[in-house]
Structure formats: C-alpha cells, structure tokens
Image 1 (cartoon, rainbow, N blue to C red):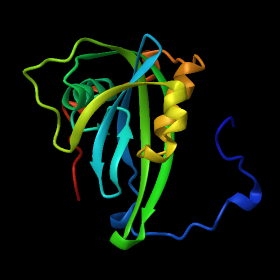
Image 2 (cartoon, helix red, strand yellow):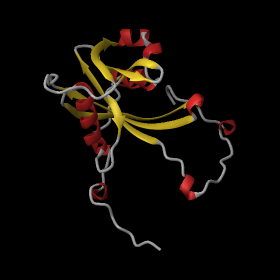
Image 3 (tube, one colour):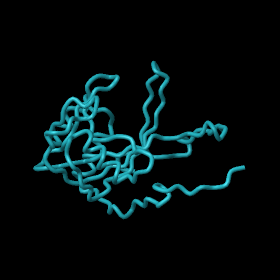
Image 4 (cartoon, helix red, strand yellow):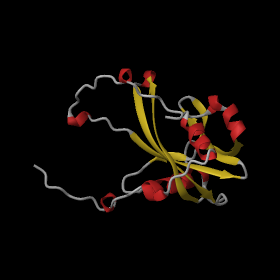
Length: 184
C-alpha cells in the first residue's frame, strides 16, 4: 500500500459490539485538486488549531452526488466554478482532539479538474481567509500548516498521475428520491 499502512494480523484490534443506535459513521468529505501552470489552488482557513492550508473541501450534503458536492464546495470556498474530470482517490483518515472529546474519521473523495476565474461578486465561505496558489515544493515545505496529511497526499497523488474515471462513482436515484421502506 503506497503511502498507507501495511496491515498485518497484529494490526487488528478486537471490535466491540455496539447498539445499532451507536453505529460508527465516518464523515464523508469531497475535495478539489486544482492545478494550473504547476501550482495548486488551496484555501487558508480558520481551524481550532489556527490558520491552516487545505484543499477546497467540505462535507457531502444529503441529496447530492459526490461530484455535485465537490463542485459546490469548490465554489463556496474559492468563488470558482470547478469542473471535475477524474477521481484521484478515496482516502480514510482519523484525528482526535481530546480536549474537545472529538474522535473523527473522514472518508475523503478527492477529485481532479479545472476551475475558472474567481467570481468577484461571490464571497468566500465563513472561515475561509483567502485562496492561494502553491507549487509542490512549497506545499512540501509547509506541511506543518496543512489541515491534515491528506492535503499533500491528494496533491502528490495528482502530481504522480493518479487518475480514475468519474464513472467509478455511482449515485443511485434514491439519493434524490429515497426509497421508502415499510417500518415495523
């Protein structure tokens, strides 16, 4: 597993059974990796740990496909219309913030694509301080300012030519018109 953790028998911990109401639910996020002329578009955002750099990214909302989500998030955070043309990868990460009692797992879908010019009439999402373009060497040198390790990982995968067709993602019609099942 390049860049990932190699699993061995010792890697697995016993899983405790939880009630169905206490089911583990990772946060699903979408991220845009936008490169132009050897530079990558990032956002600088306010976090509990201070100002951090991130890919334009955010949570997938109910009733939208991953592609719709990443287009929305890129527009909200950069004021640019994003057109995804590939899936770079699907990433699983976790962080803990003990002081706040947080233990969060993220399932991130990172998309590559192009973005138009910033719309000067749009304001950036709350918490986004600015957008900026950085080269891969600049990104590598600023790891301590990244919101998570996924910022650089997604960009390095893009730079290495990792591309998957958007067709690998299927959004069932039930996302838009949920199937109603009889309850007991």
